[in-house]
Image (spheres, rainbow over the protein chains, first blue to last red):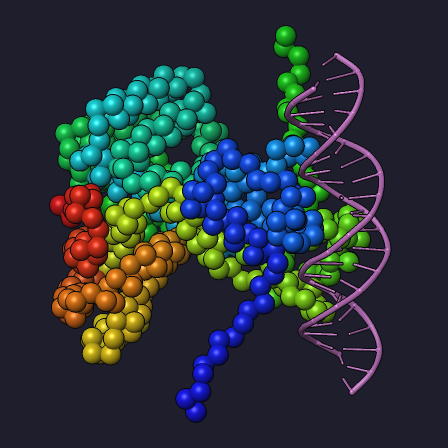
Length: 250
Length: 250
DNA sequence: GACTATTTGTCCGTATGTATA
DNA sequence: ATATACATACGGACAAATAGT
């Protein structure tokens, strides 16, 4: 008793060690976007492993969105700038395997968007305010043009608000969750009979939100943004699950 | 002009096709957790590819947390139950390469936790209320025991609230972001001179939040939870960035 | 613009340690 | 305890693709 306490050893695969090392180099900034990795043959030399092992490591790094390799490229794999693609991927599988309901997703968007508006009302620059204005203008024009343009302008508005929140996590989460929601129902909105009425209503609501952001009334902007999103999406949420959304309104 | 519009063709790698097919089978539920994939040799037969190609596909699936394979396992790779590990991984790299500040992370936690409390105040069951009560009891006992136990009880409280929100996305995001925050500063809290005072204050605040949840006053619970988290973490956030956190307090 | 060298994508065969029956 | 099937890792090979001459 009281002897040395040993830790269980996890046998770690060779390719994992390679992933860890390259990942560390990229995340620490030692290997920035645009930089190239050595060729696979060079890497097998540096790590003293076979090419298959190097390739398995590269596949993992590619799946995580850190690098990209093309056949025949003499410069080796390219270190990519960060994109939320990997985040988007795992969120999407989360949504599918956990059976996330549209209600849960929209509710989460309401949380994110209202928080972004709350912060934006205090932190927005005049330039960002102008962007939001321009986005609403484009929404007005798009009522005639078509739903795709309308949706794009709507996205631009919410992105401007998210940027104005000055929180990159809110920005990126907004982006990821929104694209999942739109994948689920943009088709249904585009074909809805009352879509023109829905668009006009949405524009009025966005104007009210923007007014609150302009005057710096954060809580009002937050409340209005929740209402805006509820009115826009509630029709596509099963009636029984709408109560959960309304819990965010009052 | 006006001829048929052709789409650019992306040459898709063989291993990607395999990933897509197996991924689809898993996410659609056709291949549930615990089920086994065919052996690598069987797979090379079914997909008509070489061993290396099969292995690269399996590495990607493993990186996404969908399967796990062990050497010698006669049953083939195992389909795993969903865990937010992949989400956690991409969030962590996001935090590192985007240089997310502690302030942004704590701010995001405030958003998530206050929303969870808002919903929990309306939707919580009596059992969940009892769990929150028990967690606060454990926090009280842990003041003497040590910071690790205190932190674990604190986590249990917030998890109970997140579950009570009945939104799985809020639950999982809470879990992921919290673990990143704690990785960053739990060491500093554990060694802080005033940690006992901080713990006692935190307990009082949690009691107030729970009281609001108990009486069903969602907005109050949400406001108090933001205040609780601010008072607990603000000391570790650089002074210049605290203003952004206070913007959520009003 | 065609040619050449290099690189990646893919395939095949083999050796080794491991887990299950 | 033995046998079998498995994953891990190695090495060599060829075709397609790319960049630079």
